[in-house]
Length: 188
Image (cartoon, rainbow, N blue to C red; front, side, top):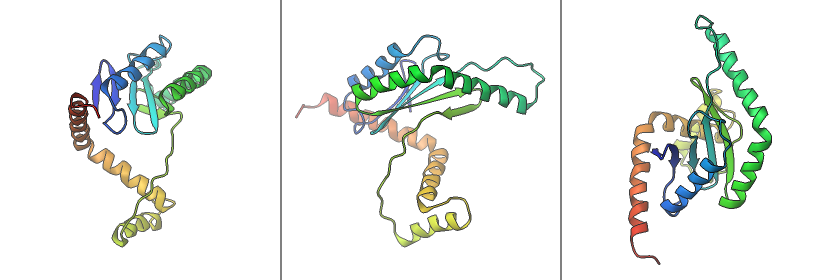
């Protein structure tokens, strides 16, 4: 993942065909979001189907000697208040962006050590698995880790994403270099 102009933007050549297009997307959100919603610029994370806008909220003021449970409760209340207070505006902005960029918009916030997504898009993915791979999923289901093979596959993807974040970041960076090289080459 790469920080671009204060905004976190993830894309590769399959997701946004030009750097100019990605910059326009980032710029549009920077200009469209109301001042004061977030501490700093939001992260704008992009894939083929979805744009996620994730902003940082200020931590609620609590006494330094409060318990972790009380601090966690204050953060949850802060997040819920933001979610409810901004709902109508977020829906309007998402509708505009979806029309303009052809992707669904998801919203989330970070506050303290917590991250909460308000809306997300769940996209079916078709895959073919061999028996040994299906057995892994079935083991996760049988052990109660997942409710279904689909949930087990999503669990595996999250686990790989968590444990291979550095490698995936390098891969995304390499794809951005490929995108720049394609953009500099002859136009077909």
